[in-house]
Amino acid sequence: MVPDLPSPSRRGLIAGAGLALAGATVGVGATDPTVLPDPLTDRASKWLPDPTDHRWHPPVGEAHARDAVRRLAEEVERGRGLWDELDTDERFGGAGGWLESARESLGEGNYREATVYATGGMQLAAEEVGIALHRLDRPEAAPRPRAERGAAIRERADRLAADIDEYRVAEPGRDLGWYHEIERRLRLVRLDAHEPDPDRDRAYDAREVGTVRAGNRQAAQRVRDAEHYRERLRDLVGDGGEPWADRIERIDARFRAAIDEFPSRGDLREEVEAVEDDHGPGPYYTARWKLAMWCYDADYLVDDWDEDLALANAVAAAQALAQRRAHDRAVDALAMEPDGPRSFDSGHVVREKRAGEDIDVAEVGFAGSYERPIWGDCVDAYCYALIGRMKLTEYPQVYERFVGEE
Image (tube, rainbow, N blue to C red):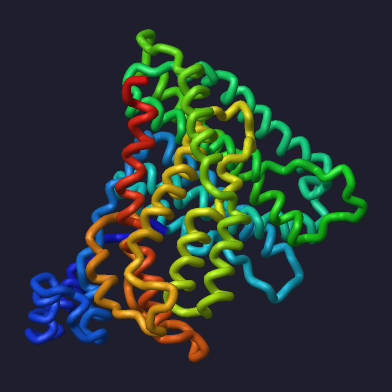
């Protein structure tokens, strides 16, 4: 779901918490946060304003969004009919509220959001339809139709990938964003569309048939999304675009060469494990482990999943490089030492909560189990805020490699 800014009732609740707490929050901004008591800075970590969502996405047309919502509604209606035929006490689960959200967004003119809801709801509704089809022994549940449907969807994705492989660009900052949105969807299509396992020697059960149908239906919608974006981008670029394929290939190669200068994920894990061996599982080790997990556990991003999706691969490499650089900056800036105390001042969370991205979850909540030390939540929130600030330093640099002068 897309997070909303705080509602008026939420703001009213905060305002009504009393002058003492309001004054305390002001004091956090006027005083070095680490000299204040933890109960005060714990609360301040929740109430400092979160950053506004500035993420950019290509717009979606009204007709496209209405078509996506209509398809989900039809899947839900079909599911109701099929489940009515089943001799069972189980209930049809529908789309889990996604259809209602999609319709609401459609009515408000939020067409991209409506399409996202329609695609998400399709997973739940189509899975229920697939289960019913299997139990009713309908032809659609047989292996061949499922495989043919998946193959047809992947062929559409392949044609679209070939259609954009020159990456004709008129305005780099805009057009590359559109191409990337297209390729992200094509990558998901290839993951979701059914491709039979030739080594499988047993039949699919009802739940598996449901999963296959859900994958095919979501993949089909994502192909339609990608084709929609392609048509709109073609109108924007027109005849004035220059091919950027060679430049993207060069950028990708430079990113990967830079990544090779960093330690591997395995080497970094050994380094972090050595911290625990030497100093025990205190705040410093916990912070190092979390930063390594968040910034290095995505090595798959620089693998060639789909060689024909050159821009998506280059962007993934850029992200991996920026995360590694941010990791090193964050380690250098950590507000704790390997031999430091076995506690952590949550005032450091407030100090760091002044940037974007991961900082929206940089809150001290103490929602863990009794086995988790109370400082663990403070370290979690602090690392979220710290790595968010470091990413804000690194991401603009890799972005400029795409759109700036070579």
